[in-house]
Length: 211
Image (cartoon, rainbow, N blue to C red):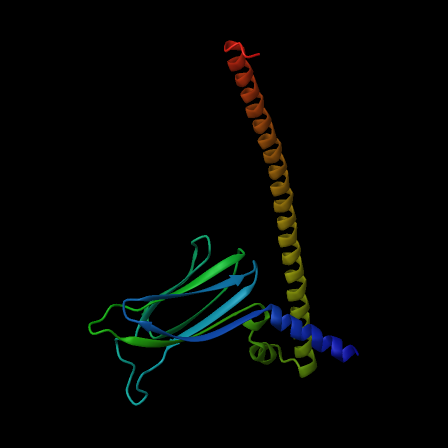
């Protein structure tokens, strides 16, 4: 039973972390952007490389890309110009959508490049083989380290979801309050208009000596 719970926590931890590996085509003169929602204080690493169209020959100069990684607030965390491959790593200081944009320089005739991009955040961003090698820990200690980080990731995710729930509740309370005041104002306007209509009709009939 204990072993089942440990495995369950490990699976949850890895599910809560993000690992995105994609391959896409990029035409020269075009831009391709990939977004990733990252929590604050989460580590993130990324690796990218342009696929050589002919492995029997060196990579042609036309197969170079410019890469920029920015946050939702416009802060720049990685920039590389006209490269065939690269990588980045940083700890996100702020939560939100981070954007990795790839731009292919214009060529005539047009060139289509294939790019491999691997982007990992949270627990998935940690290279456990290096941790085991540098720390000289055995398999059990390594699994405990993984379990500990998975539990921390779950806890952070729970705090994050709780904050979002509080924000949604506050938004619902504000919306309900505004709708209540709007309903009262609409009722007041309708009654005022009805009163003015009655007064106008009464004045009109009195002038015509109909009443």
